[in-house]
Image (cartoon, rainbow, N blue to C red; front, side, top):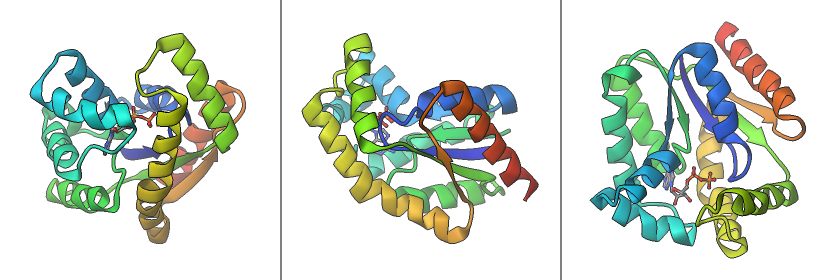
Length: 191
Ligand code: ADP
């Protein structure tokens, strides 16, 4: 199973990703988590990524693509994966196409969580209070949403044109959203 989970910041990608990887026994690859881990460990990749992340800007394509290419070559990703936070630009979509094709596979499903902007901002500000993530400030959140609209929506559109995108309502109870996400993936699997 090879899945992509899209959604604006605060849409609940991380939460829903856990349910999907449990269900399908695949690895969860979150580019945001990998960057945060590198920032925490003060690696060179972390130092590069941090300046962009703290501003709510996207890390340059070549940096992210090289990192994901490397991750997808690891043994545990051979049997399937869920990508969360990647691809985020049209260039990343194209790079992923090449990586997946080179491994002789195709994507099984692309899911997008839909959540209203006001709800997103409220959730992110709440997360800022709970977890203190350095990019969850009002200003940086606004920039992340702008970048999502400008850079990531065209990437989503590429999958819509291929007819493999499924939109899922991401508002309401976490368990209800989970049921909808699992149902959407299983429909995609059957189609
Ligand atoms: P969000 O809550 O904004 O969806 P993530 O945890 O997925 O956050 O990512 C945090 C930050 O990491 C992003 O704002 C961006 O700076 C960087 N990042 C993560 N994935 C990518 C990517 N695919 N391309 C560029 N930058 C990325």
